[in-house]
Image (tube, rainbow, N blue to C red; front, side, top):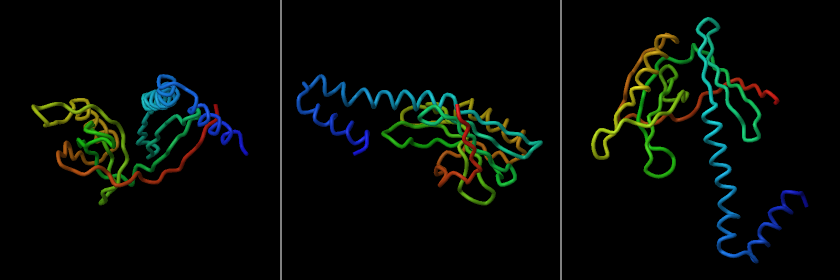
Length: 167
């Protein structure tokens, strides 16, 4: 058996002998660690657009603090838009800025912002998202579709050449 299997086995056996409070900690602590790391990794995500080279590069962190660089050719994108969509979990909404592939509903997520609240259950475009759309359209030379209130979120992320960088 691998070390991971032994760890899971010991963890499950420990659950039989622990109090309710200890079980909450045993299950809650790993979830809190994963959530905190995800927030940290998203805060370190960086997007660079280089029109001279014709590339978009996205720098991200992996779960084990490795660095990944995704590189996309700028020529495959035709428009930038801002859209408010619901996040994957619950009733949380986010204002996404996405680069769209020419003639398709597929795209690349550039940034997310909290949406502007316009009354009860009505969300509008965050001013930072609007500013980013104008900036990306100017730098990348793509069409600015602006804020699309009822647009669906992008179907998929486009393919990229990925480079892993060791620590």
